[in-house]
Length: 269
Length: 111
Length: 161
Image (spheres, rainbow over the protein chains, first blue to last red):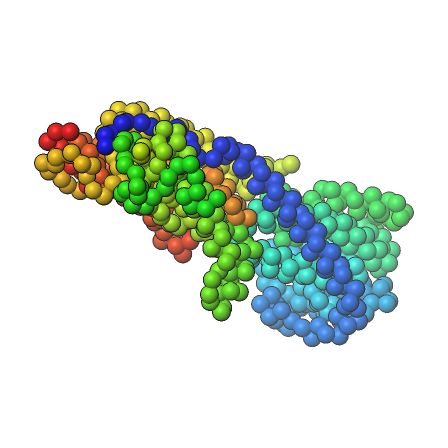
């Protein structure tokens, strides 16, 4: 037996696929899969909504309070004012199955959210920034619009299903990509919802005051304050960009022939 | 292909029975890194409750080991060898969910 | 688009992408240079017998023997690690790991062989190769800090061949 020096051919233990090709294939494949998953989730939620009537929802969640979101402060004069304004606006939606309730969340971010059973939560950040009743009325009308279109249940259902399906991915790079893709896909749906809720909100505001002056002022101010930064993410980024939104609201008012001028009602606090 | 079924002889002993080594060329290696997928994970998770064979994983690792062996044989062939002796297998975890299957031995010419 | 939005977009999307591109470019450069270096050293050591034989080939007269080893700890670049993370979900061959393990193993073998030659030996027999993963203390031991490749064997000094 003797030793004959020889070398094996190079590269047998390395796949020929280029790293960039592998990356492209995986990212494209994942994007497609996640878009499909999101579409299926959206469809499942729509299906589930058919089985939950608004009346049943209103009954089940009548006294429900998400404890971690609500700062219970009955002394806050603003709570009573917001509640009264909500009830006044809701009168213009006579067939509403909901008994609307308002709660305040102690957060600096200007935000308003719709929860099952007719619960509207506004943040102290929002209340600190609104300067007239008309501004606040449009924000509340918009949330009531979500109830009419049942968007609050959609968002809740999609969020739950999405969290479930993403939890299977762990916390690696797949989950990050999945979340981004899912977010972008859902944003397409939520834009439509927000525009519809804006329309209903504007209808309520017009019915209450006879004009829609000041409705967009809140968004203009918030956009100025945050300089387009996503610090106001909670309220605006899940919605269309404030500039587009203001334009759309104005356009809608013009189409309906609603007056854009009228005396603003001052806040009572 | 099962292990050792090839025109190149594979042996995990020093000697290929009935043959004589005339030349040796050096160490040859073959490897592959494989990841299991979520579907298999879920099935294995269910099977874990009752224990026993995780057939999905057995198959995955066996497939991978065969590929590692094929690559090792490919290296031996490129050196002009007709046998690989003293072959060893190793399996090691590389990252979460991915394992390396690895085979190595000495490429030789037998008569 | 305002200045704040531009900055935010950069922090959320631009920065990770820039990091990926940077990791890919530098990682590929390091890999290419390492492979070139390995090939050069391998051809220099071509005449040095390295085998997995447990016993000595007959007619070898050994005057002395000793254990030699070579090892290296390597890690994937960020770009390839992200791809490997995606691959781990769908399963299959994790192609981005293969070049890393290949060059690490060849480097470990080279270091062992160089160790043997430096010590005046003529050959290495009964070579064993081992791979082990070093878990990262930070990510609950889930993420990988690196992979160690170890090659060891018995180096022998021959009286005559």
